[in-house]
Image 1 (cartoon, rainbow over the protein chains, first blue to last red):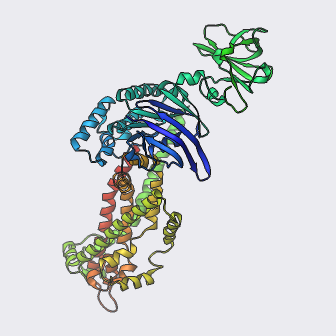
Image 2: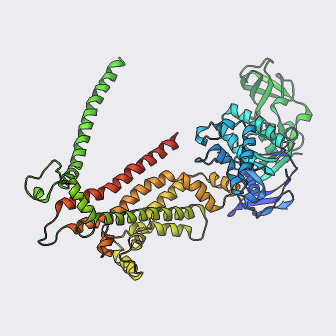
Length: 333
Length: 286
């Protein structure tokens, strides 16, 4: 268990700056998810905490201690990689025990710690197998086991679930969360999947082009996005953005989430739109419309509510409180 | 409808199969016939060979000829020459593998100044086989006083650009995450090399060992140049030296027995290593 502090961390590859100064304070036992589109620098940030990338500027502290110049093994961290990075020629047992063997842990203690981890992860029947004889989910568990046996202060996850199929992903997501709670270890988790971020995080960090746009509890970030990027990235289907000038009021752009828009008869509400298409998904229906200004707007409504046909005109309304207005720089007003 | 083309295909394949087999058998017979002749010649007596027609079935001198070859030979006992060849071939193969593994490891996993320059320098040596640099190499080896020694036989042939290149290509296919995972696990570079990279390369090593062993075994020009003492002769050059000069009478049965003996170790290595190497391939495919 440990705290992790990033202090104005920057990273340059040659002349290209990829991380433009990130500050994060992670409390003991906290589960932090770093989420963002590909290329936003989230993996680089994690690898700097792991010690696999050098820190160009700024400071990384684990438990208050500056670790910028320490080797990964001396940082008291464990990492789970996207492709699991299991040693292909070693059995599951040896894969989990390798780090302990290098640390010259007594043989009996290694066996004991691997057994405990294997039991926790339901890997006991597979200890003598090679990684290639395991399914994707089992390999994922071995990678986690390798991290657990070292009893690290911090867990680092680099998109650990993206190689699994959808069903397994949901199951492993729950297991990771439970495991982290059980062990009480501070965790830093990188993903591009906003559902993973929403469900796993105590707090999430939304990264955009090398900057942390917003740090906060998932629901808080969802309800009160600080920038236009965050509003657009978190939430599915994404937030609708309209030119604020059309409807009046301040700001350059107006964001409104699909579930906050209520359709009504033509002429009613704030604006009239033409229905392009309606996707009935069962529990909910997504109505795609085009505004007179040419902008597209998606409405999300309950699946049981009757839905307008293609080409029909409908009126759209929403509450003032649900409006999100952004300035020309993309910041929330 | 769907039946006739299929049965037609089977028929064609049946005929093709026979033709292929006939071709292959003919090819094997073609290649194998001289070896058979050599074997027959090694089991008969000297007068029988020189008296035409040449015999085509083995005679009764097998043990006599082979014993004579192994123990006495013509210039040096064949047993000793086999040992010399064995030491040289294994020395070259093992040495080449160790050196190229280490240099490929350095080139792929470490960032050091002039890394690319070194790689291309190694690559450049591909253009300089022993035959091209044989005079200066001889000069150097003679200067070190390594004529008529195992080190003189082995060391000049031990650097291998081909093997370095092969291992480099293989190491580049190993995911970076593996090295990173080992780093997080606390492995030092040489521990990573020893515990992870080396076991992963074992099928490549087995394949290379076969190729390099045969390369070393078949060296002719270099041993011929630097071994003047018959007790340091290798078998491949030894056979040539058994040939008579001038009016001497060639002891053909013993020469042929030597040839057959010279063929055996590479065959054993190929068959023995092939098992290991195919098993490795099958395992990694699972």
